[in-house]
Image (cartoon, rainbow, N blue to C red; front, side, top):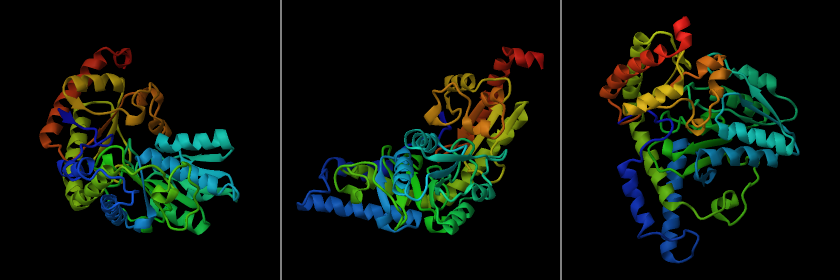
Length: 386
């Protein structure tokens, strides 16, 4: 199998699995209990919190544990919107955000009367900080912009947007799910108030994530229960997951530069070969300001789903748009926001590389995909007319 869908999820590293084992079996105790085995577990959870905080250049008390990126985004947006509704009801986001952000904004609009501005992007998927500034009103209480897009890999000017938010006294949430573990992150330098991450995107376990909440940020819990995570996210902690995420952070921090160098070479080889071998394709996303592991392209006159099925038959795993919406028949909202016509957007493929990929994977893909496209185009009435 050739796995080229690392932006959807990554395999949990053996070292991470090994680190988690005893916390499932021997040291299974609830960290909220007062007896000594539980207090040992509690100490380990706090040690993990320190490691994850260091990974983001944050303070340990600014990290709360969640089930992943989607929950983190929901907690940040809804919790801050509710906390500041006395100040205003206007939220700014972008048209290319992950559905965890977009659908939360729509929920706040429909159910609670918040007003949301969805900023446009340029043809590369970049948000202009000046557009953020122009969208500000006296009622603006929250900005939410992703660090890097999950489909096209475009990296956004978060530091600049963070400065605008800070100078204006506006709370700023950043979906950092796709950059954590790939690019060094300092929440201090980015000037963010909330930052979401998910462990399974950087070789950690599924079902565990974290939300950075800058000290002093106004926030109301949206879940209610026990005292865990300072009452901000109640429920018994996922101890093995927390420990696994901390280990994944540690490994990713050490291998980040090596991963970047190697995966960019493979990604560029894949891109250059496919551009050379397949006529009428276009590369999506910024040519330089893009995640080093991500290649998104549109193959004209062919449907993405058909290509994916044929790639799967050849043992190659890729995606068409976001993994969270792969069951949808609608074209990618991200590609439409770039100004790509729906009929072209339907022919999109996303290849996202990871630590286990080799040049042999790239060679196989570059051998297989052009043949698939050629055969599918033979059946296309649009290609015949061309």
